[in-house]
Image (tube, rainbow, N blue to C red; front, top):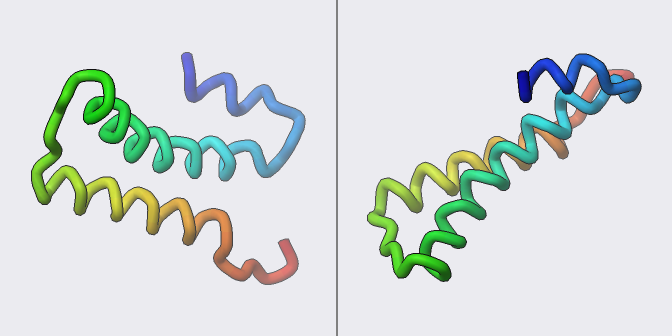
Length: 67
């Protein structure tokens, strides 16, 4: 249902924004776990979060031909 809401948005770029938000959400969730629960991420958690943030950068800043 959560993903379906994106199809109802009037902005054609909303899907891209939602995808980028997902990447930030992953990294933010790890950070929140560190602050709120004392969680210590291992190197793979950090690598995964960095991959997500790189994905956000690609989604948001990649040159697009005519879009």
